[in-house]
Image (cartoon, rainbow, N blue to C red; front, side):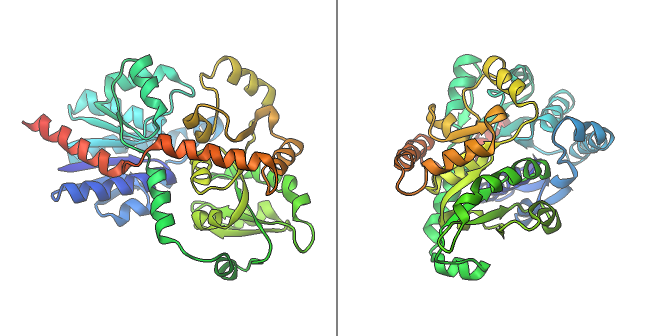
Length: 386
């Protein structure tokens, strides 16, 4: 069968590439065309655009690049029509992908699958109307979404397991490097504990969050036995940008080895997103930090408009507070420093958080998300052709 996939950012590239791998294993005639990244390209098929051509986030960047975005969207629709796939598979990235879904449903009459569903439970819940109208099947990787979609909105979905949980397990089973060897490879001190900084994968996130993270951690990095701050470099960010942000701060950087870094870290400061779940599944106590403009207003909106209790996947999956979330008006050096101190070795909150991580892992289950999703997708497509 012919599969057209669209992933709009780095995490989507990873998850889509794993899905492509599983589809190939279960459908020997599978061919692919896609918007995605290097990991998808490594699985084969014909790329149409790199996701970096689409990656505009936030109101102002989207407004400034509106012409480019609209042109890419129109060209994508033309490309799908010309290639005539058996199915279009969308991966997260709802602003772009839901528009594509509407076009495919109206003009082509082929099924549209959504893998890694839009997070409409957080905001823009009205998008359920477009999902119900334009999405043939929705495949979720978060267990709490079943209740949201099926019970609240009476829209049946497939929970297929969580790919991050599987990726972490695969990594832990194969990674046996000692801290000494890791530190030697990256010019770090093997005798000092590591404080990992995960400041996001986009330039604006890094600019907003990293300087405050560093200021918060500095008192714990004094002396020969103090912590060493190590930044997890994002694959889509060039070294020059990090250099401008870091300046002369005592921060080392490790690029494209986030799991390895976390494996040897004592604690972490983490922006919201998949990184919070990765950090939890690797057993590293963390403080979630995320700067927003107009902090007081955002807090009001979170309490009165946004229909979810938490911003981190860890707390959302557990349905209770496991990690501290310091965002909007709670994002400050004082608060981050205070919460960091509470999760360091010897502090009672550390053991409590690690115990909470076990609950998160249990709720995610042990299914292989890409294998399960691929199996169900192929079966649905076969039934449709009968």
